[in-house]
Image 1: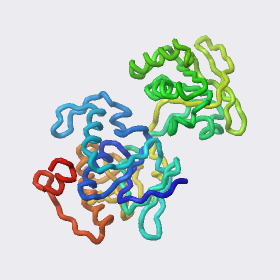
Image 2 (image 1 turned 135 degrees about the horizontal axis):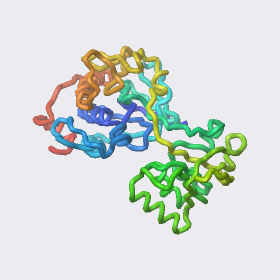
Image 3 (image 1 turned 90 degrees about the vertical axis):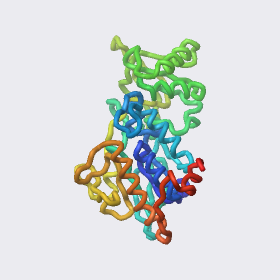
Image 4 (image 1 turned 45 degrees about the vertical axis):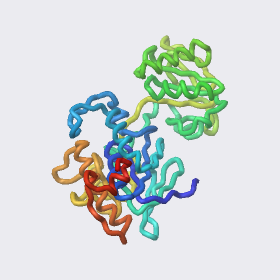
Length: 342
């Protein structure tokens, strides 16, 4: 367990709304730490439709999900937000001094007077493959994400999947692993073609193996994998020795541990007031698709508006003894200095 991190605001979710919240809070000198189960910023925009055009962002007639995320990351760069990717917000505790302690499944603890939930429709949860008994190996020799590449050094790695994650980690772990085998149910991929080409080159060089096959069973003791049963396109099965299995079968969205945070949920959404976008629990705010109020529109631009009002209210909680002076970025030399454009 690492030493708890103390900050002004903890944000669950690093999608467009969570990112813009960093900007609005940063203008008020509030520091942020963000937790997201994905391995990069952007939320649904980058995970589900990175190249799909979006037409209703003010001032941007057309922008892709990835482009919007890139622009938001550039916009918040002056505020040095800290990101905790590939981590799920797993528990929330109210401390005696009134602050919140947010814990993740990776052991990170963030203490802040303000918690902002910007988790969209919830957490992206890896899809568990239909392999009997796989639960016994999870977290020990079966992993749905790569948090530290060094943990896989010298391992005999089996990767299953045909998307970007499967191909990216095949390429990145090949120099680290003792051996690496990629399996996919067909000889075609949903991944970026450049990544596919790189994988083919590694295979041709004998640095990895690729099989058109599916994983049917796992073998081992006490959570430690020893081998997997693979089945080819012809249904013939064979035993493949490996000590680590990384299944990348996509993601599904669930509310996850947020449902256990003690909030007053309504149909898996967090009711908020429209003056502050604060939940019924003081100090906990909800912005974006995760919240609920009369007239709610699930639009990115609505989430941006919610983030702006949330930041004003959050300031009074994080800085109870300071006076808030409203300023415009167009005319305030103070704000322009913070943004590095003065």
